[in-house]
Image 1: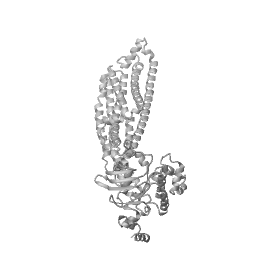
Image 2: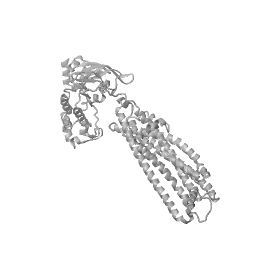
Image 3: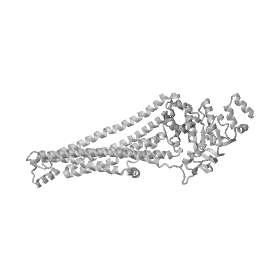
Image 4: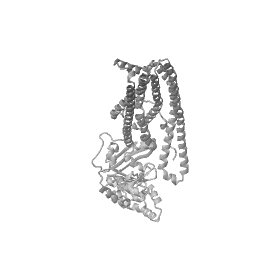
Length: 629
């Protein structure tokens, strides 16, 4: 119950732009080409509409509001419009009121169209982002279901949840507020620059004189906030890992009175996350006022230089006002580009982690032309099987045995002997290092995985129930299993009485991991699940170890019927549940030490005999052992 180790993966941010990753990301846009084209068209339209307002202001001031008979320089657009009016024999002085009304209408129309285009652009981008997020999460979850269990042994749950949630959200932000809107900012900047040079190239250079200062401030902010952003991501990853571990292990926390210590540890991690965010806030608190200060300096320079040019009739008052408006619109995208940079950088880091997960090879899969028989007989064989979870640390050493169709094999041994590993290899959750595991005489590596696992039912000591209802947990989404069969299966394993006592019966809600149900009740549901699927092979892994004596007697009677006609592997510590097995396999340190019937193994006076003595120290057990001796 310690802080999740190996956080370095969360710290890697990578480059702000990676062409290889970007090409893969753009592949998720292809199904939504229509939305992409619409968004680009709307961005182009809004960029054009945003240029209209200042020009309309200049025209109104120069042609319709300036004093009658005044002379001097007027702006280029006003000069163009006056030329058109004169060419048509119209005196601009006579239509000042009408012209001002028309200009106002044009200005208002441009504002409305800008609003509509920006709203539509935002809606389309957000909609496209949601579809892309859905596709990504679906792809990641589907890939996670295909990865072997060895992958989950190496990767913490909190990290995988982060991939599907936080990292996908970062990509959504890039699609909705990053890459496409950067294109829009570039369009606006290009259009404004062109208009400024058209109006007055000297004053345009004055407007651009503060750009180096903005770029320097942005570069400083980018470097500082990058390190801060990395630190914040590391801290939030640690919070996620700590919460996942301690919420899952809450019974242990409360049992050993670790609440105060766990609270103290969480408080330290939470404080570190807060401090990291406060440091990032400091940089933002400097950057945005700094941008305001620099742009204000730019505005002041424009008023100073532009005002001087107005005084000498080198520039119209309308042109100066237009310059001021355009300058404000020019500086805003520049300051926004730093935020876009952070979005792009976070997206690149998230995409790298997501694609690393998606590129994880599925090492256990059905081969081409996989073996998939219509009927599974249940002939099981382990032939000189060696297996290790970690390299050079074998768990099984040369295991060989065979279980014929319809037989029951019991597996016993000390903790860590490799009993549960046999079930994992039979279901091909892991691939063996050496030897062969066969079902019906065919290597499990040649089987169709879905067919193989559909033919096996497994009941574990720690029963996993999904959120939903009791009936849904027995059926597990298999539509071919009718309500009648679900009820019959529950009745056969003596689960029906307690299910009918639940409010709602088979429709009674089941909370996360079966909270609210006793261990025995959850195991009865698991037995009903196994029977409902009618498997050819049944694996019981310590399935009755947590059941009280009365429930065990009910289960034992159900098992006598459940095991008939099925090949069964019963892994057990409680030897009372396996005495009727056809064969008992005794594992010790990954090797088969004894093999035979209950009476044969007692007569050997070996490991099984000693295990039996440990469990039957009362008079009845001693008498049985004495009788065998």
